[in-house]
Amino acid sequence: MLVGMVVEGPWVTAAASFGAALGHFNPWVVFLLSISGDLVPDTVYYWIGRYFRHGIHRNAERYLKISRPRLEALEGFVRDHQVKALALFKYTPFLAFTGLVLNGAIRTPFRRFIAVDFLTGLPNTLFFMFIGYNFGLAAERFKGVAFWLPVGIIVFILIYVAYRYVIRLIRERLAKDAGLDKIDH
Image 1 (cartoon, helix red, strand yellow):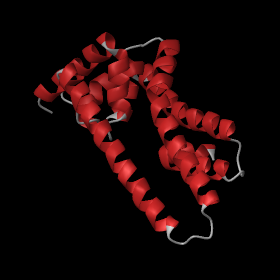
Image 2 (cartoon, one colour):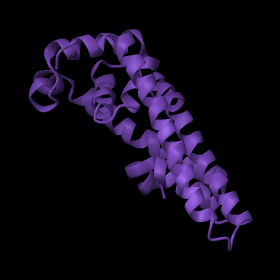
Image 3 (cartoon, helix red, strand yellow):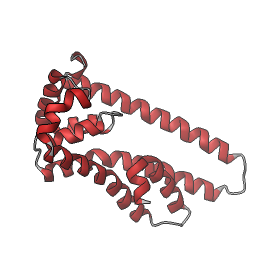
Image 4 (cartoon, helix red, strand yellow):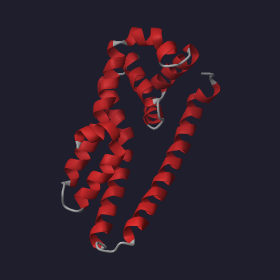
């Protein structure tokens, strides 16, 4: 389960929570594994940035497709607003790797990084656990009723689309606060 949560945490968390509601897993173990599955890759990216700092700065434009002004703006944003920066990086596809490596490259204290990373990942974990667990409870209560499966899938998709919309709004607000929307790639 931990390997699945490292690779695709939200969906595996929802599925494991579904199983927990049916009595197959302990919900606290699912929670701990989900948090671990979120922190393990982020920690690896942090240490990559920490150890390969000079190479990252030198090759950021070529390999990460980040211009020098954008990299400098990101570094300043991370230094000044670490919580906002980690939230922006974690919830923006393809920017997560860059932002987490950047945290290591600018030598953010590791304890602070882990604490902020935990706090920014916690809402995601709780959301997908809530969804999976409640769908598991509903499936247990209404088992044998073929009507509820398609309805549950539709409701889950609608909730997920609304969740992605809210995350996009938050991400755009954070990018605007960071001034990243005004810098050319």
